[in-house]
Length: 114
Image (cartoon, rainbow, N blue to C red; front, side, top):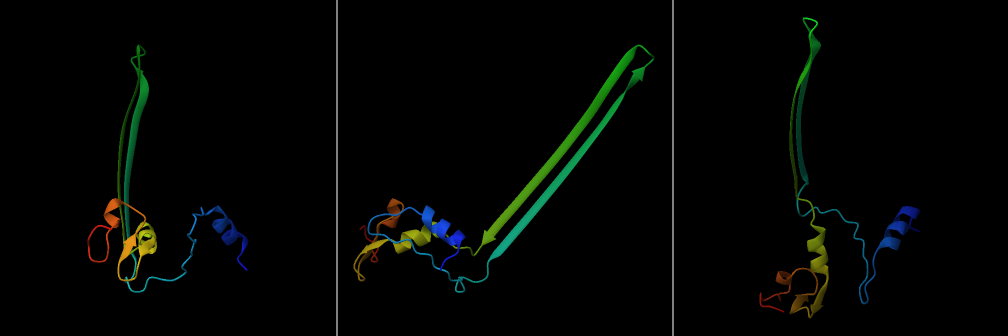
């Protein structure tokens, strides 16, 4: 029996006629290990002066500098949109045709338009 979280997950899934929602709980070992690279750099400098000059002038001066940099790469992760396109197929085993996704997905196994 699925726990409450899984039941909630499947309860929110949209259903389409002649389709089934499938959860494939399998690790992608053929694609190699997943890699994630994350870098973050952050600088901040604030300086200020406040005072009085000869009892006639007041001053309040400040300067601020901020720099940030971010770099993120994920490799060998599965593309779920491509998996969805690959699983929604019509036609025969000899001539499968993708029925979902962008127009360039609609080709047969021989490479011609389906």
